[in-house]
Image 1 (tube, rainbow, N blue to C red):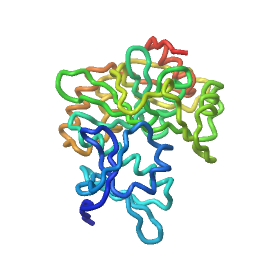
Image 2: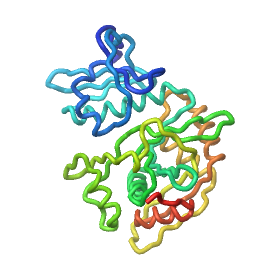
Image 3: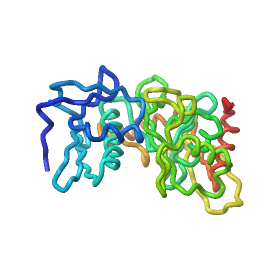
Image 4: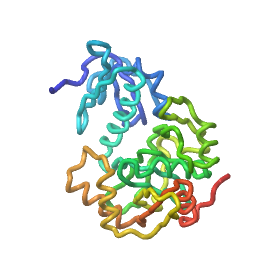
Length: 298
């Protein structure tokens, strides 16, 4: 079904003044949005709903629809305001990235280790969030447990990661090998806890804020094992393996497939790539920090 952008009314502008993401109908979700997204400038603009990038509306039966109009336009529907706010956070990130020709979004964990960002790639349940949060609990500044914007992906400028302001979360209960540092980190910064998920809001000293940038130091493909006694191992990975990992974890609806392959190949060629095999997230984070010569601020 094809729908039209809103044509009248007020809008909420999220993000930088020069290129905001414009949202109509966000009022009902603003109270819940900080659970999932933080640090984005926000202002209400009267009479600016025309040409919005995202629309939030309530449908029959109280269903809340979050509709995007940019590349990869879609309508997502939710049964409650909390889930809809989470959906709106994802829509804001998608529209923000799509509006920037030289930027992609990686489904990746990331933390500032050594001279730059350690970017964690892998399939679902490979441990991107677990290892990233272990690094954060060890004192390395978290840039994201789930997504990271990367720019530029073309030209001669070095690639850098940009924090998208998505608040971290972890599945509960924590695994037995989580260790006291991660358990304490989760206890200290949990904003909301359900039976299965802890939603965290770390201090600025612990996590980067929206728009913070850092160069990329390493691209790490994760392979999670099930032998709890096996030590974590880290070794250089072939460029082709890192390209495959990037292509499996990249979102860029504004790019053609050919452009995306070229961009990810260039990225893998200019940033060192590694393969990390692990069973203990705590041991994996320690190995990464040692290998990248990261000095914890705490």
